[in-house]
Length: 581
Image (cartoon, rainbow, N blue to C red; front, side, top):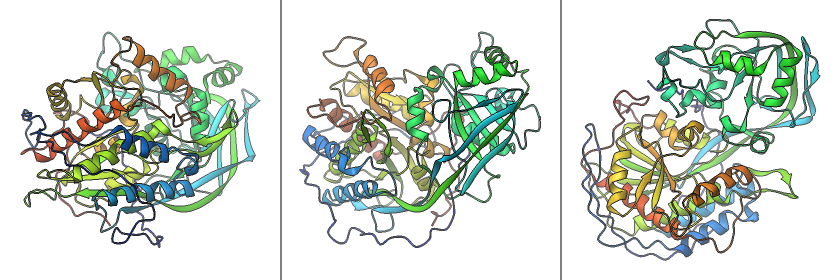
C-alpha cells in the first residue's frame, strides 16, 4: 500500500506567458561539443523481474569535465539569484536549460514545447505582524526564528492557529504496522505537537517502520497531511538535528522566507492554518512550565499504547501574508526511441533546477546559489541528454525532466506526474540526480531506493560490469527516498532511484567521503555557502553521468520493464488512462 497521498493540484491553469517552443532560436544558446556515444547495454525489466544481461558500451559517451563545469558555473552564478521559481533568476535558469537541450538536438518534450507551466502560489509572511504566544498552564512568547519557524498552511491573506496544544507522539496512523498515535481522539480545532521521524524499531519488533530506514510516515509532509485529515488547525514538529538530518539553521533558511504551494485541490480536507517547527529546547521549556517532561513523553510515544495528551497550553499563532500567483516551468526534453512498438514508453532522467533564491543573509551573503543542490545534478543531466541525442537510440524514448520547486515540497515533479505527457503506465522508470559528484573519482555509486524495486539489483549488476559498486544510503533513518523528485514518481507507481556520488574516493582516506558529506550537511546545505568553486574535481561527475546514461539506456532498450518488489509500499499503475491536460 502506498503510504503517501499525492497532493498535486488538478486545477485549471489560467493564461500562461508566451514561451518559445523550440521552433525558433532560443534566448540563451549553450555551446557544447557534440560527439557520438553508444551505450549498448541490455537491461532489466517488466511485468516479471528478470536478470539484466550486461553488454559494456562499445564506445564511450563524449561527456567532459569542461561541459559539466560550464553548466555548473552558470547555474550557480549570483546572476541567477538562487534560481527561485517564479522569479527572474528561476526564469533565466529554465531558459538556459531549454536552450541547452535545443542546441544538443533534444526535442521539446511537452506538447511541442520545452516548458510545462506549473501554477504556484507564493506566500510570504509579514513577520512584523507575527503573534506567537501561549497561555493557560504555561505562559511564554515564542521567538521567530530562535524558537519556532512557522508558515502558512495555504495561500491566504491571514494565517492563524488558536487552540489547545495536544501532544500526539509521532503523529502517525499506520495500519500495516498496527500503529495509531491518535487512537480516535478528536483533535479538531487543536494545535498538534509532534516528534520528527517515526517510532523506533525494537529488538522484539525489528521491522517496525522498516527497521532503521525511515518510511514516509517519518516525513514532515506526511505529518502535516495527517494533521489536516484529523481537522487540526495547526501543527508544530519538534526539531532535533539527529532526527531531522539537518541543523536548525537549515530549517530557518528553508521555511522562514517565502513559501510555494500548488493551488489546493478542492477534494482535500481543509488546510492547517499554520505549519511549523519548534526547537527541542523551546518545546522542552514550554512543556516543563506545564508540569510535563519531554523526555518522558518521548519514551511514551515509542509505545503502541500511547494516546494523545492534552497539555492545557493554549497556543495563539497568527500573521498576515502577501500572496502571489506565479507560473514556473518544468523543463522537458525528449530523445525518441527507435522502436515504433514501444517508443511511446519512456525512461525519465530528472534533476530539479530550483533552489531557495534570495533569503536570510548569512555572513553578509543572501543569495542561496545551490551549486551542489542542484546545479550539479542539472549539469550532469544536461550532459547526459546531449550525449543521448548524439547516440544510437534505444528502443524506448528517453525523457529529460528538470522540475521546478523541488525545494518547496516536490511541487514540479508532483505536478508532472499528475499531468504527464503520456499515461503514467508508460513511464517505465525515473533516474533522479539530486546532487552530483564535485569531489573526484569514486569506486562506488550512491543510490537511494535500491531496495524497493528491481532497479536496485539491476543497477548493482550494471555498476559491477563497469568496475563500480553500489553503496546503500548511509543514513536511511533520514528518509532520503522521500525527499527528492524520484518520490513523486514512486507515488505515481513508477519505479525510481536517486543516484549520486559514493563515498569511497580514489586517493583519499577511507572515511574522507563521509566526512565531506557530514561537513556539507552541517555547514553548506541550504546555505549561501553552497557556491560554485573553481577548480573542483569533476572527473567523478563525468563517470557518474556516463553510468546514469548507460543504465538508463539499458532500461530503455530492454525487453521487460522494472517492477516494484512484491509486498512493498508502491505498485505500478495498471490503467493506461490518457495523459492529463
